[in-house]
Image (cartoon, rainbow, N blue to C red):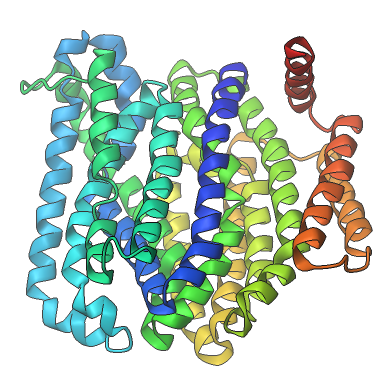
Length: 494
């Protein structure tokens, strides 16, 4: 866990900054400086871009994660043809999506009847999808080369900072609404250029047009693996974004903006998961190749502790302040607290089960990853339609909670039965107890003066109770060690 923790800590700094900037954008700048329609449009663009860009990869990114160790082990860096092969697959996938969009254009526009602004600008989905696709492809190689700090900065911080600039430019009249929409769909252009330059400078990202001996040997396994994991990844993302698509189709852009604001607050808990996943994936992949099962189990066990601590910390902070935020934004956002509560619990479950998905996807039983995502999709699609129709946008949150619980329970049972790995112990009980006690201790404090002072006080008070309690109860040696090193550095700087 040493290399994982070291790089995860660095990545978390950029992730934290990025989420802070994203929070300012979504919670304040978008609601206060733009219309709900425009707010909903940007979130819809991003969701569609994510789904289509994953579809365009056609399974090439999982192949990069799984087989890169073999290419590096058996080939010289100039003989590596993996960048060229996967790049061509991604380009072909994108062209097929463009062709499908052209053929079904009229049908798509009709289905967007309750979101006319989206329908008018639908063609801008294609450049956004292409740039997100290229960035994702480059990011996969960055992860395998352990350049996750740079890629996380570009995706999580720079993109959000550029979004802030666009919102402010719109507010000050430097650009008009249509120019804002156009530029928003090219947000990833600068990050793509920077990440490409970073990879080229490593000397390990080259384009060899000849088929290597590794490709010749593993091509059948790569194809089969790629198709299964691609199906799993696509279904996972589709099932996790189907709620926003159903809200968009049934309720329109304004309801989508409210729902996605609540979703964003819950997604704050993804910060530690993204950081640890980006570092742990290549480590686990290499451990499978070396048959170092003990290391995989240790990473699995420690990830459940670290991620549960982080998830509950963020969840409690959000829940302690969400009513103040809802009051600040106005009556249009009255449903946000309930959405955050339900989807926040779903996130706690998701993070509390650790990196189970990465373990399965990089193992010899990677087909099971596909099967569980089929199950997730089968559950999520009808649940979202039924519950959103009956309960409104809160129904989307309930559907997410049910789907995520069944999905992670299935994966936990599989890993336990297949490998005998059960990562939970008394430390997890202590984390839950500390979380509940500290939350209610802060929640019981009466409202203080105004929403701003009240929010600052509750945030600081909870942190002052939760963090020392977690460290004193010694739920994780790694967390205590990291905290000790940080405190030592602070003393030295003084």
